[in-house]
Image (cartoon, rainbow, N blue to C red; front, side, top):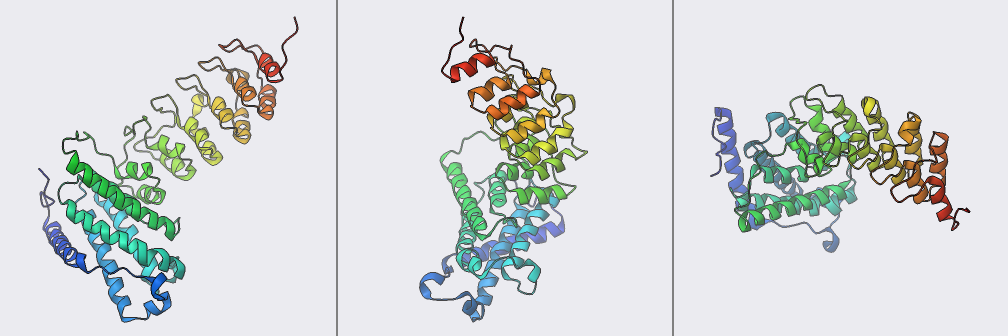
Length: 385
């Protein structure tokens, strides 16, 4: 049984919901009247179109679609609080300003080619189909399904019109898949705890959305919320190499996100930052690691092992600047030190850096190899007795 959006609603919520139902009816009426623009084959130019009588109607239809999606956000996303809904609606408003409001030159970031190739054509078509799918789905979709699709849909200012086009396509595809699953797999177990908006946005690399949500003090943040690999929000951001957002989250006072928290394999935020290849994220995380700076994961691999595996000597140098010989000579579950790995991976520069920092030739891995025996084996030689 679906939850009515009118439950526990104020009078203003009721009026808003009635407006939503009117928009829904109008969308259904317009569904059969959709006529996509064709710049490529018709010879129509963007300049000529913007001077035509059809342009105003087109803009109104576009605004109508956005308004309907905003209404859905307000009335069918109980998992989002008011601040989060405001962020989503605001991002859609900004998109409209960029695409249509010539009076706000500061927002005019799309070129005529962008408008012609993507915004006025593909994105408009995707938005139209997206609203139609929302109506066809009715109550079959969960609020989390709708929220995920809406987050994927949201345009982002850091990327161009081609990315916005891709996002609307992905949002539409996600909505269709969710609808098909709801129809074909009606008895799928319901997740006990729905994901928060910022967590879903991070999972899908919607970093502008994450940034806007972090700017709000009322965004729902949970440090115990994890993905299938056991990564919480901070570990996910570190693994994606987004230093700015990682640092913002660590600076939050409530709830506290600790970079020393680990995933299912014992990897902490520094392990993840190194895996991302982002030196700036490594630098952002290191000051927060304290005594756990070079702590090993469940496989015995320290951040030094990770940096050698990533073949990033600049990152290795940063870590070695704070490492002592005990750190340098830590062995993983296979008995390999970081120097063993550097030799096996054919990185002589890393080997030299590790030796200078105190790497010993004495440790032997579980295959019976010391640093010297590995070097001799790689040279095709054997030690003389």
